[in-house]
Length: 152
Image 1 (cartoon, rainbow, N blue to C red):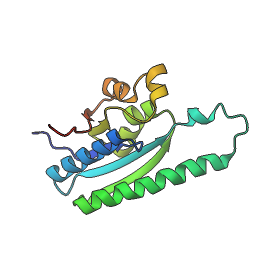
Image 2: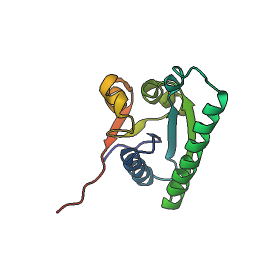
Image 3: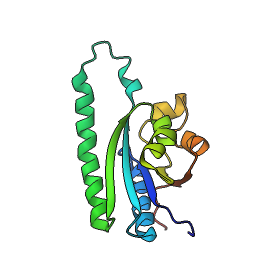
């Protein structure tokens, strides 16, 4: 890899593929040196709450708290691997547009490392893959990470 990246965005959803993306993002950050920033992102898709008739604001808090615990673990993983500049955030909205457009601008990312598929199979069937959308719509380099399969 000849490209040097200064700010790497890794969206995660807890899937095996997003964990592979995190591993790849950590590796790229380490290859690019201490000045490279790694930003781990989780998007809470607010569309999933719109159809709940008895909506309570505590639902957002519960979902965010669960995400925060996972993100804390990922943050520690990156730090233990040697990444000097790493942080995370939880954003709200449609995952596709947040990952492809809003977050790269907000965090000054010049690379997105995203898992090949995520947890939400229903959205993949009905709306289309978040990863596919990000690859098509993002204005910055995008790397798709896949889970490695052991060689026989």
